[in-house]
Amino acid sequence: MSAVTAPVAFVAPPFGLEPLVDFVLDEVEGATGLFALRATDTSSEVRLYVLDAAVHLPDYSPVLTDEQTTGLDLHDAAEALLLVVATPAASGMTVNLLAPVVVNTRTGQAAQLILEGQDWPLRAELAARA
Image 1 (cartoon, rainbow, N blue to C red):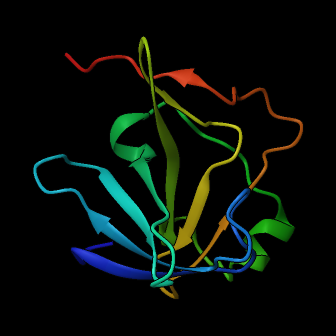
Image 2 (image 1 turned 135 degrees about the vertical axis):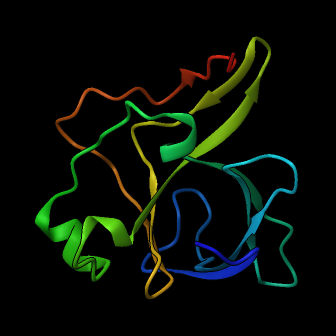
């Protein structure tokens, strides 16, 4: 996504954030590939930090099912922005590789997908970049 702020509409609420589906994806200035995913509901202060997997996890290559790509109206892999939820931990930062957020950059539709049958961890430690 080239915009500094982009609207994102989830096809179903992200896990644990029901009933929220409307969000804004804000680039975090000075932190390449780091975004704040903020709920637009004014009564909510929900915000998640997400990392662009292409920038921070170049070896992360989950496989989406045909049903998942159809649900997001993805026609080409280049339309998919693959994000992982980042969580601060005592030892540093962990990322959820089991349930990435996929955004269709053409339509703004998004989904948090569970990667069934794949061996990705729920809490992977994010290694410091050299």
